Length: 199
Image 1 (cartoon, helix red, strand yellow):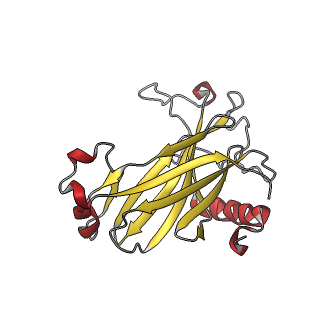
Image 2 (cartoon, rainbow, N blue to C red):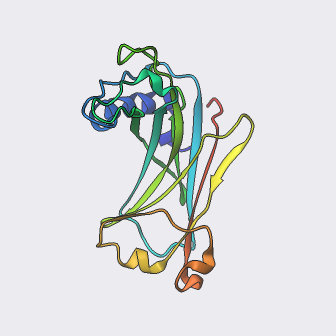
Image 3 (spheres, rainbow, N blue to C red):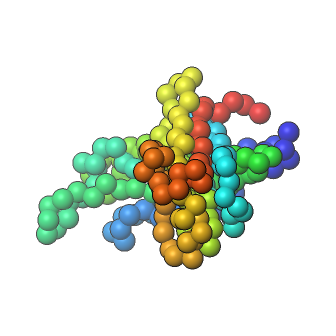
């Protein structure tokens, strides 16, 4: 087994420490979100590049959470609209041969009364990878799978986007290969998620 994957608890503790510094909720009016130090529900994410166009500078993984009961959040004074609190967490990434793996906790955030209007309940919205080349991130994410199922996404990306990576952009790819210029040179990033098993 890859030594980088041997200690799930240690890697998750590191992720929490990073998240406490780097991850953020939407808007300056949102309070500090508490991190669950003892999560129990995990998903494993896997990513691989098909027909790779070349090397990438780095690979990142992120998890995206949002509050599912928005009535726990306050109304904006002028518009009367409720913001949906959300949170982004950086995830440690390990290489497994030519592929990559990350682990995400569905219950990484603490449900609590953050705004004085009732308990906010967090849910994992999606998680995925960024394959970064210069200033361009090739991004693929998936929703958490149902029990005993797998979530997957395998969009196509153009070689032109890879070669023009000096321009800043998040490229999420296309589902239809025929819509890509020079489809014969297209590459894919496959991301899958499944419920984690105990190691």
